[in-house]
Length: 82
Image (tube, rainbow, N blue to C red; front, side):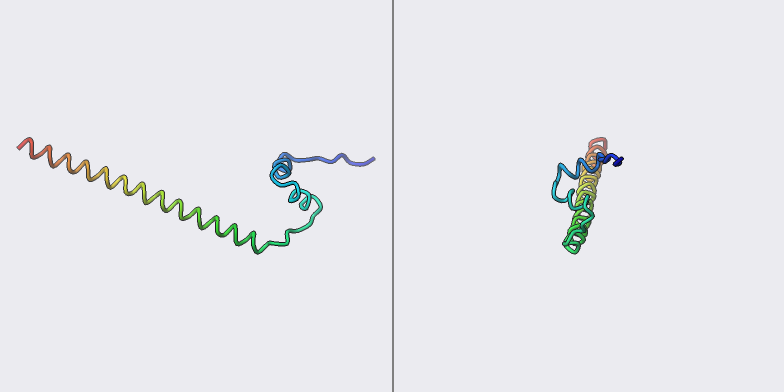
């Protein structure tokens, strides 16, 4: 008796994304463009780091602006009191 084929949920997602890539993986055929895949992964990791750095810089800018507005309000309030 033949063992029933079990399909995992992750395989369904892979199949829906790209049927041919799923079939290659199912048959155990390795990708012929491993260098491109590694280069693409490296690019996306570097891009992610740059996006994070840009977000942190923007947050820092907003915090500096908030600090400046707060200091101006304090100075104006102190001049108004005197």
